[in-house]
Length: 392
Picture 1 (tube, rainbow, N blue to C red):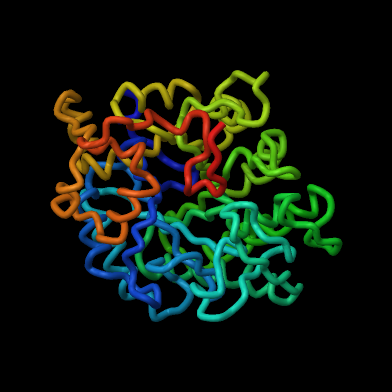
Picture 2 (picture 1 turned 180 degrees about the vertical axis):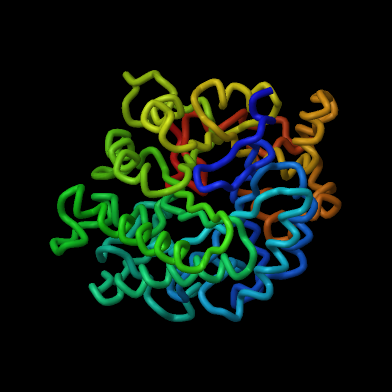
């Protein structure tokens, strides 16, 4: 099986297989973003099998926090806890990647302790309907956030991670600057598509400069992006493919964010090719691509690789079955747990707050044994974490 083969990045980082544990929100950090023992236990149970584990998001700035229970990498105080997390993840050669972000307008004054959210422009998000209007960032504040991404990367290196993943998907700040929906600035940071690209390009450049300065071992920089937005105006597939072409020689891997690896365009019903294959046409031979979405059985993982991806990310299935990779490697797919009871979640070291949102927002795709109307995948709709919940 191709997804069990080794891989080596151009900078020399070796990975024992092509399986990646998707970044999933645990909501298990302390109020200030410090790592808890619940988080360490959750990742430790799933370590050892995947070639890489990407953590749930960690905010790089205090005003970049998007929800309660979120990891933080915004100060040096976080390094000891992040070191424990990195050590737990890197069991038996698994590589640990810290996902970093700024939530931008996908936050609110309660999460930010009374402060107004910030974004590229003072335009509220479409989803959820009660989203707060953000304050437009000043030029100086934009430069500070770029620096914050760099300092977060320095801390990830110090904590022992093998890389960082810039979360430019799911309508967070990096995506907000690229989207015509959320960025209607008229200065150097907005306007044309090329100017809307300047913020993510500046973040990538700063992060890579920090890696060059501080990393003493191979350290990768990945980028996650969403293929499309449903809002009008908004990012369309052509915009995302253009984006990929602009950054594919500047980062070490690209990671798609979507709920089904079989998804086709949600905006253009005439485009019947999988999104994965269309991105692969732009990345093949240049940069590794991570495909993702409703991968449950080894045959799904192999299909992702055959459709052009270099890695396959698995999320919900690793919640149900922490030994998924080991069982695939021993050719015992019948033993892979594809359904589970809510009563199993403590045994599976799933933190309490995470259990709650799995029972609610994600219930239809978790395959609980007492759910008779489970949805098979997110092939024809964006998942809640993708930023716009709408059935098509």
